[in-house]
Length: 333
Image (spheres, rainbow, N blue to C red):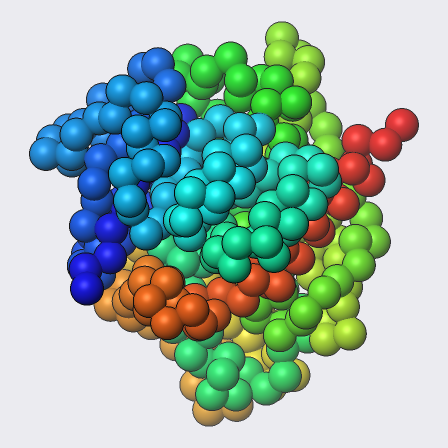
């Protein structure tokens, strides 16, 4: 049986990769619905010209798809997730999958009541082949026991193209809820942690005084029974960089280190997905661009077999809970 999906909400460009990668693993997209004409709509239509647009949300929810791909305004994603699950669909949400603790509890209750899958596409891991190779090396014991991660998530602000909701924390969720959820996911994954404690969280607006509600810098320290992590995120990517951000991850093990230069190797090799491995016998830079993106095929298998091979449900819940805890800590007076 061919699995099917429907795209609900096109408010962030991540919907491009979500749709394309599910199609690549054989999932047929039945169409899309979005409210109004958000900026990513034109690009979506250009990439997927044969997909029909549902005029009403109700039509999209009742189209019979197996999977809903949700990339609406962040504050609206939880409600759409609940509706999709109540209509018999599993859900892949763009990050953040929710923006409040109340929304997270609603999603948890709906997962329990319906038995549906809620998966958040943490694209900085799931859509970068270098992360796949890093996972394989960690599993093989190439750097011993992982004891720390340092995750850096710089982004380009692109001020002229940002919609009004981007500057409203009640709609956007805050820089730690949003961007830093990627790095929290990576910390838990690579250290093998089931939970963690937020020991420090901070946000600031250093460079955008005309947008007082924008948080353009954030950092988090966290620890678990397996290791510690540091996270830094910002909206400071300079114009000369040939991509939206120099996203990096360093994984420290007891017998070596792995550095991931995901999107650019400044002053170094061309292309993306550069991995630097140093251990007792190897010291080399590896082109990881061919390592694959197993998340999407595994999610399709999970939908068919009701398994948890792409990401456990507990992991997904925990990442978003930790991101919300960090945001609340940073926002506290």
